[in-house]
Length: 352
Image (tube, rainbow, N blue to C red):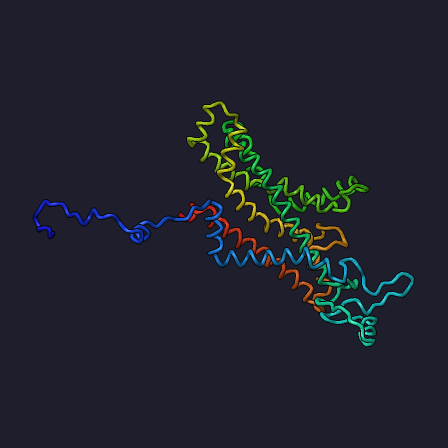
């Protein structure tokens, strides 16, 4: 039945029940997801951040697992046998060169594992030393970022939630630390702590770690938490006026409970991102101090100490400086790009 143009008659065709195909076409339901899943999807779509993550994972896994089956040790001097003269042919080998005894074994039909990066001036395999140096630098960066994360989150959450005189005092302490010259204070503290901690840890389990590494952790605990504290304080200040916080306070919840259960979980994405961006800063600082001789204790290598040792034979063996410099650059650049990707993926408010 056709409807006339100016008629008020109801068009019954509009009330026919929709078919299942029409319902599926009209109703497009989004699959249920979580904040973490959405962030991971955005992170994977960021090709630069994802490639940087793959590079960091490959470098980390190589530094952990390759030394397990590598035939050479980072501290073993090749050509040195107790009761026999030192074989100097193992010192300063170029990549894929062999010592005199290894050449004889090859002529006899034996298989000898090559020295991919050659050896250093003490006759130690340089490839395994680069791997161990990478492991040490990554471990120092990771644990230093944890120290900064714990102290910065604690101070920032107390200052942001308590406010008033507590906030005033803590922020003035932060301003004083900010005013100090970073590199000068790091060098001075590392030198002083090295002299005071060394005798105190002799004969203890901490002696295997070394006084330099412990002093480096103390330096991070003293100086590098202020940026994290300011960031957490700003987040807490913006969240403490929310309705759920006021509701918890009205029911008699303690301040520590509100901070642990409400405030910190709601700014955890910012905390994780800041911690990820703190790791390359810690690695660069460790490499810088090791380059100056204030890093790990010999014979344990780090990327900075390897670069420092390479200066003695820079003209003859420039690759010894280039290799650790490239590894440091890859780690720092990869972590910075991955941290930027985390920020874009898990804190989309920063992108407007």
